[in-house]
Length: 352
Image (cartoon, rainbow, N blue to C red; front, top):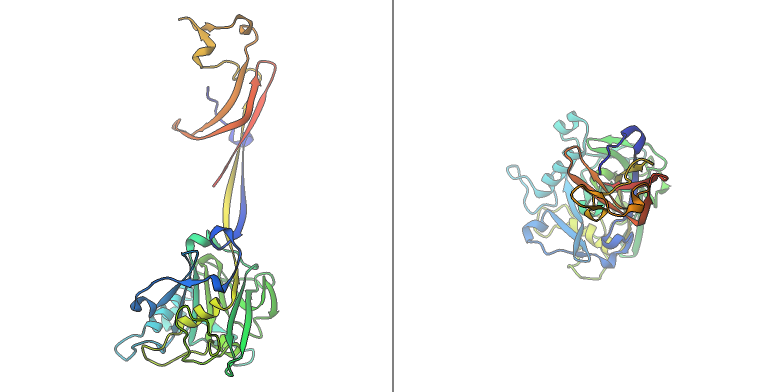
């Protein structure tokens, strides 16, 4: 037995935002000691590192320089890998076509020229794995603790978050852009007007970090690198190694900073909830198509006491599309008795 819906009266659509821990298994906070790097070729590592948790990719880390410094090879005829990375991400995030044409680069108040914004010649970039972030990263709730050292080799940490709770977003080609500042869980310690550590693009799962701002807080030693799996932190930091040489490996600085720090991060997903009210009025659904309900070739009601007072039991509700194709089935917890003296309403909820 089928009955069409009255869309205006029988259906309700609701949009909700669902957040969950970013890491595998819904974990929201991880110590950096849980992070490992995936196996990549030497050619791939000249561009980026994949950061894993529980043997699954969660982040990628890379480094870009507007002029190609820090690449294995860079010349008038050969574009360095760091320059290619810088251009790719800048063109991806910049909404102003003339800035893309001129290759002007990101501009931030990084503290090197007072409260004036300056062009960032080099940046560290962290991207989130799309499978983990769902629709986007949840702004105003995350904290990244980066660990490194001063030039004297003394250990030091900085905590970074975004200012989405207090500052309106700027626009990017694919969604909002917030400032990355010192603080935690959306609580700002130093405003972006004093020092901006980078830009946060939640819809793209992208963090662009100022090398100037990071190196002023955690300079370390420019050429320092600890091999994968190492535990040394003295000398590790974010002062850029701008040599044009195979040994230059600035992307690894981000990996080590995360491995010695921690990350609190949540994914965000927009879900649509459709509630369908399946109504059985008093004169509806009181007979059954089940063959056990009928008797003989004339399909008489089998039990005489049900001729004037038939009884049915609703145990399942099916939803059909306009082509009469079954798209969903809901089973009630216990059968609902239905007759001419009763009505029933079953609410079916679908969430996408």
